[in-house]
Image 1 (cartoon, rainbow, N blue to C red):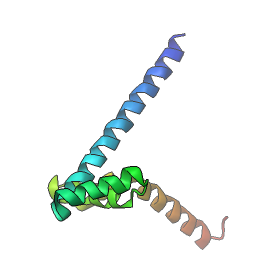
Image 2: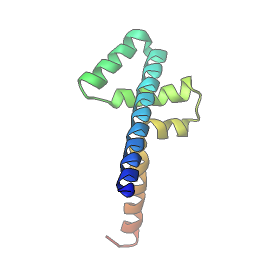
Image 3: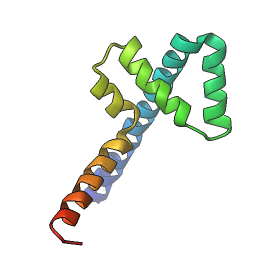
Length: 104
């Protein structure tokens, strides 16, 4: 029973981490859009991202919010804004290496 409880607590903690990350990414996107396009532009980016489920502008402005407003290094801001790119880069590198050496 204690093992099941520990797994549930870990899942709850992981869900909380993901929610905090998502909210901070939305906030960074707001700050980035407001920096470049003002209040109206930030509202527009949020409308496009949340109602039309087109999140590319939000990801782009999350990068600029973390980089320009929070003054993070560009590579950390990129990892913050688009974590999927890091996984894609590893996968592409592995595919390229396996193609070079004839392994599939």
